[in-house]
Length: 150
Image 1 (cartoon, rainbow, N blue to C red):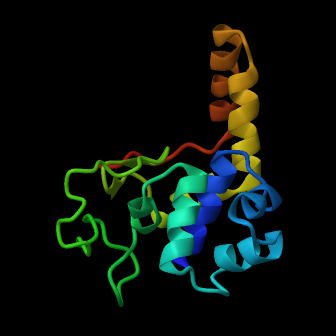
Image 2 (image 1 turned 135 degrees about the vertical axis):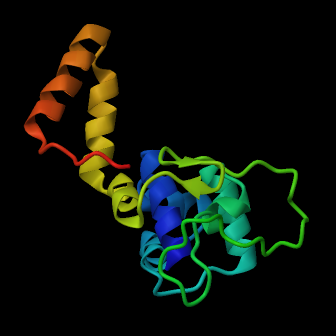
């Protein structure tokens, strides 16, 4: 299921439909849906194809994956590849630096929502930087204040 969520995240960040991804892989969009929902497992060769189609290293699909039996681990996940790709820098998603997530799992899941992606795209289509800043200030003023973290 984690791999499926990562597939969906990357696909939506690229603005790619399930149909387009399916065409790139030579499968139907229904099969892409099954991978994303975790209904079907993703085999090694298909994972390679997905990584190529989505322009990410294979390790991207395993970034932020909790260890077996754990729900959320604030430390980086253990390395399962035995050092084979130690020199390769992991793909950094918008809410991640290195392999440590800067957001909780709940916050990170917001980045895979369609409305979040649409909001980000619309925001960056505003050509005037001053207007963009005012929009950001407006949205912040409408949101409830967050408690300071210590």
